[in-house]
Image (cartoon, rainbow over all chains, first blue to last red):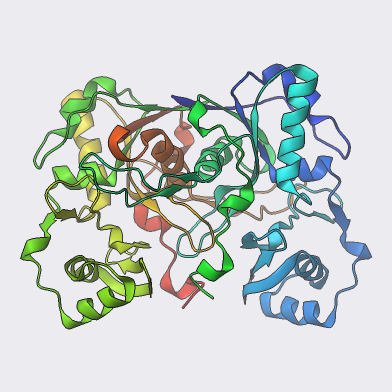
Length: 242
Length: 242
């Protein structure tokens, strides 16, 4: 049995806040703590004031194509290595960290004062830091995932997706295992961290009633490991759309 | 709190078996029952004997490109409207039902005797039938999802994904809602059914130790509704890769 419990009654978080102390009393050994990207980015002060941004000619051109604020587009392009798709209301890029997602994960919702919020600079490191602090300061051994909402190529709607991981097998490799008939498994790699982030994101909700930290309890110990969110990135030479 | 509990001790299922009677004692009002595609297909006798298949010239050609059995490729092509991608060991198609997935969901693992197993003919109808039977015969009001493992364009590993839905909002449309600042939500459509299938699939596992039916308990009543898996298909004119 795996259960997903939101941590309720959390304060609004600000740069420098001590996340671990705030949630330590809710944690138990073996928990998987799933944090929304937004809360991690806020604590890590990943705000960018749009008023400080001077859009480049390219950003202005792309902004015209997608109908977005040229300053926002400038921020998105600075966060990205490639534009994957631009269309009316759509700007999908490959983030410097390798993730393909809308607006490079740059977020304007729930961010006061015309500011935008970037993804954490290194979400795997953010996850590891929280995990280390939980262990060192509170003696609690947890795994930590950082989650953002991603769209998909052929499907409607977003799903929670892992962008940071510490203490868990992100990608479970079952190559070599066999089924009941002794035949090699067809499905050989399972995106464990994404599967956990998907339901955590549903439990967290979005918007005004959101609870940005969710505890997944009962994840089998066999999924403990040293995976990172980078394990979940399809190498460019296997990209289906290059 | 949402919990995911596998139903253990299930028998091997065969065509015509009575799924609902087998699991009724595990169900409560309000549960979301997530069934693996494979078990639904078996009960619905969606087996195809490869020995009976004569591959077409096109299937033979495609089989050469991907290195798969030409008879399997023939079955896949008959299930599909388009080939999305073919490469060494890779055959991704658009299934007649609209889903883009590997081998049109045609499965050779866990299927005895050189047979393959197609997706259910109409997985939304399969889900609705199970839901109706649960209510009529046992007086238990559940929602039902049918789940398969899908790969993704830019990410490694598979995740559980919804191919059939009854009694649940598959795609939660939040357009018009606002965040704490009164700003319109950026993320406006959430793939609720996919998010539930993702963790259900993790709990179900794959292969010899698999438990193909998982109960999700505690899904908010606000997600009750009349969605279908078709709601989760991105319309072709919004396809990012046409």
